[in-house]
Amino acid sequence: QVQLVESGGGLVQAGGSLRLSCAASGSIFSINEMGWYRQAPGKQRELVAVITSDDSTNYAGSVKGRFTISRDNAKNTVFLQMNSLKPEDTADYYCNAEVLIDTDRTTWHGWGQGTQVTVSS
Image 1 (cartoon, rainbow, N blue to C red):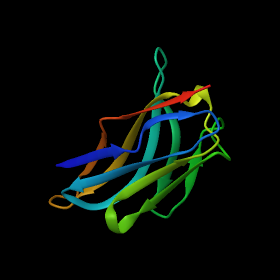
Image 2: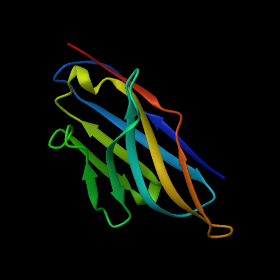
Image 3: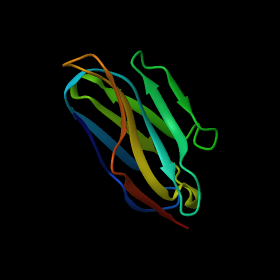
Image 4: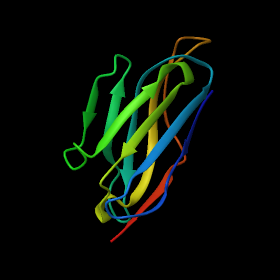
């Protein structure tokens, strides 16, 4: 019903920047919340940042001041601008969304396939 497709990952040196994008498509009536999570090797998936439909944001303490989450409602897309990247930011980054389905107004909650971010020291 709904697909989330991430892009923008890659390899960057410490101190550099990357911008991740996640586009939602399918049977979308509206999108409540979109967010980014990450999972490093051997670690649990953790919240990076979320943004609600009224543009309220929440960040993990480790990225506050360095990462910025934003969304383009017209394009059903969420972005994560990552600046001052550190080696400890290395992880697979996953998009997450809570979507109201247009056909039956049920709620769909799912994940994208992930995009890899590697920060070298």
